[in-house]
Length: 82
Image (cartoon, rainbow, N blue to C red):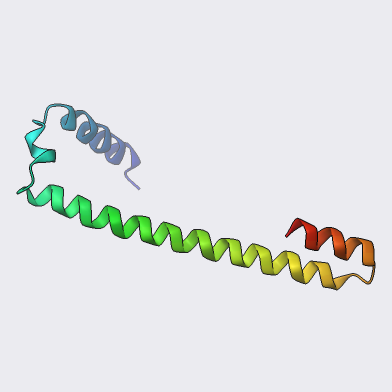
């Protein structure tokens, strides 16, 4: 609910960031900058883990499909695809 209000607030905050001084974002002793650095690192690690997990699941799915059929040519095609 209240999507109109949420969108107005969201776009208002986007416009507000244009008027913030650059020192708000890039000072080394700024707490905001350190929070962003830490959480961006955590975000990247999580994304890498999700990508690796997706690749393993996809590979397991294709290998299991390769051994489902009794046809030798189809099995080789699935394994080459993996």
